[in-house]
Image (tube, rainbow, N blue to C red; front, side, top):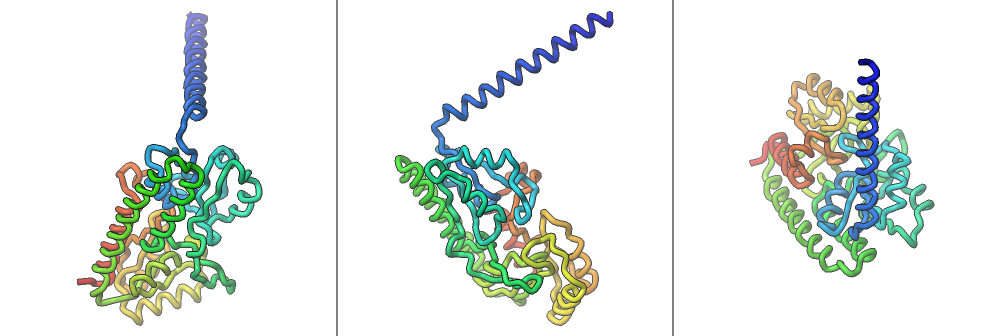
Length: 307
């Protein structure tokens, strides 16, 4: 009896190994035989833009996994292999990808093109720990996002000139969506009782500048930075002095600091998503850059008492 059970288990394992080998071979064959452009994006917004532009002529992968935060993410060996095997890599720039220089040194430019979508756009500066740094969060301004889309579409056309018109057409559709998003923000935020927003980290300076708001951040450039007691006291004082009724927190990081300040000043909390990543739950619900930006606008209207 024991011998029969052992034989059955061995057969099951053997069948499983054969099935795995067949599936792996099929997957490899698909990658080799595919005529689609192989594209790698560094994090979610660029993945969304690239997927929209590439359509059914590109296979786009996202380096930062669902639910992860890109500021401190380090690519795995698998990520590096994926980038080496791609024809197009799309980065944000502005210091968001700490590994950008290393990739640019090691990628063969004859085989793979690197596009820095935020080149020339990351003009904002932020002081953190007495050091001046570049603000990379340009994707949160719909008008700057349009320029990023143009740069990405140009990269697609350069590596796949035969389908350039297809990519340009898809980029135009996406830019139209971004233009409508900008118009919606401009219309809904023009008549607000308040202009001050307190955010988890300083991600919304470009958006605030575009629509006449004032951002005060709890943390610095990265959401997991620990503010000093003096910084927390200053933010709390600002909230009290300016009668701020809502403190914003983010979906991918702990709301602890926002909740601490909200309790101190008697305020409530709301989500203002910097779109640095998309959680698995949000992806399963069909959320996207566009829908999350619309949800951000809804929460801004509530916090700023917009008519």
